Image 1: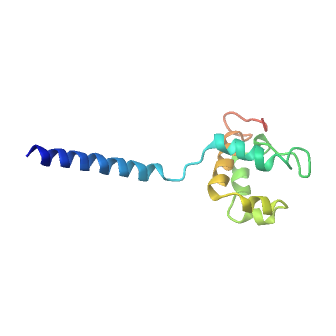
Image 2: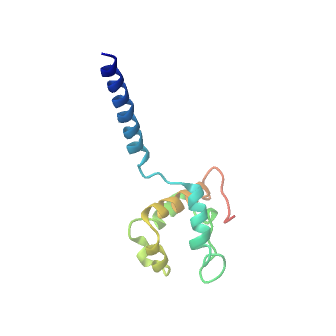
Image 3: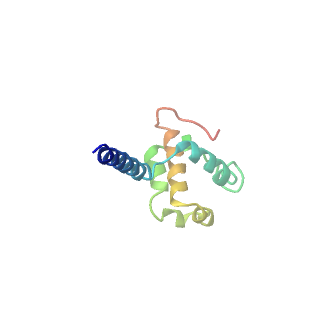
Length: 111
């Protein structure tokens, strides 16, 4: 009888763990990772170099969302750079830009 309850208990715990992993696997944007990706991939050109200077504070949240709208990147000169990034990378960069946008709680520069 005890073995049956122990088996049920461990089966339940394992099921809950797997369920939790499934939820954790959802795509969540990470603004800290987005900041690093922005510095590595975007700031190379958008730091007064080849393209206009660009930082999170340069646009409002809605404007950043418009920039990242589906397939909108195909209009940009840096189209090839966007295509190198994964969908998750783009979500992370957008999260960073939203967090520091001109109308966010804490607008910030490229730093």
